[in-house]
Length: 210
Image 1 (cartoon, rainbow, N blue to C red):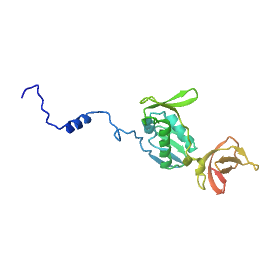
Image 2: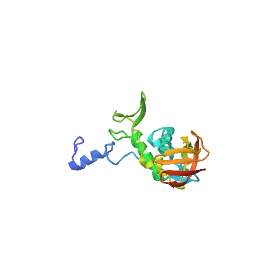
Image 3: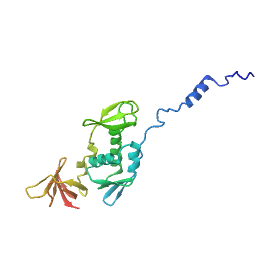
């Protein structure tokens, strides 16, 4: 055999398949961006998101920004403690996971190419999402999910953090949450208190301080 002569022993289809196997860029499900599943559990009167820092790191977003979003959507107070996020009140895993999914859609994923290679930048007073992968950009959509409306938590036995809005004629603090009017005794406008809902009658909610 002449040293400079090569004989084609494979079929064209086999060679083509071999060539494609050497391409490093993948498409489809391979390499798809995935966010770690939220590990959530209840501890006393609080809800713990155990892998909060891991999720923020995967999303490549500041922990403070993600935390502010979650607190605003849930309608409660909380704090970051090490790698965990702690929320006042009891919330289901599905609630927390749903909000993380919504945050990812609104604040991370490019609406043009669908990739997560984005940055949050300010254009004047407008917060923009800029994509490093395709160059696309759009204003961040600020949406509040009805599924997580604080009014959905107004039911007997629930505990909530509320801010007193004004006083009733009898001197009780009053909070408006959706269709509900909540009364809190011995509370002043602007005061933030934690209450337990003792009774709901129509659109009226009665509470006791926790």
